[in-house]
Length: 322
Image (tube, rainbow, N blue to C red; front, side):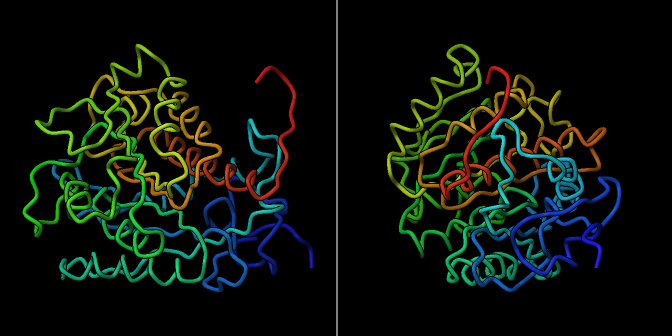
């Protein structure tokens, strides 16, 4: 059998990769196997196509498929700037999308949490694509069951800690609920890129976008590393943390945000921390242009996987001044 094309369902093993036309073939994330066999799997990629909790523009239910499609070039060459193929050492599968019933919204959160419970019970990490940001709440509940209260590093234009009644399904309140429930350790948590107002910080360390622009990504990383320490770290990456110039395809764009290069340096700078899970949310393809937003989302997810590969033994190599 010739080993090229459609590796997402033709590859027999879970490591390695082969030649694929970037513009053809099955669109799993980074061409990884579509599989629900989790034996020996390090990371499970899955999508949560849900956007009933948005407050402005809808469309991010289509985010998972857009991120998968935008990942094709990242699956073609060795990772930059790492200089290695992460899938020589890191076993990653694409589980597909969680099946949800949006017509019975009270079932959505429990369905996401049960999905995460089952994967985490197998010892794999999760890389999850939203959907709106409300999907992070059931994911955090599942991670806290396995790891205890987690440190949350949130990349976002919004605090998502506005007043919460404990019942509403809203993508702007769930981190207040998570803090109140104790599933997030706010004393070890950081919010990066905020540029909307809230009267309370709820105990989070907040690094606003103007502060980041003044002091730079290295200063952000210094704060994050000092605050998180060795705690289990869950990264929640909302693409609206990027400026609309770099992420037009999102539901609640806010001017004055960060650039894609800053976000990538930020994610790559999390090396050495205890990375236990990540979500990438709020990619809304109907408002995107030339896949700008989806490419950014796919790249930050790819680079988070590279950090895990490096921790597992992948060695950096490369040329040029890095």
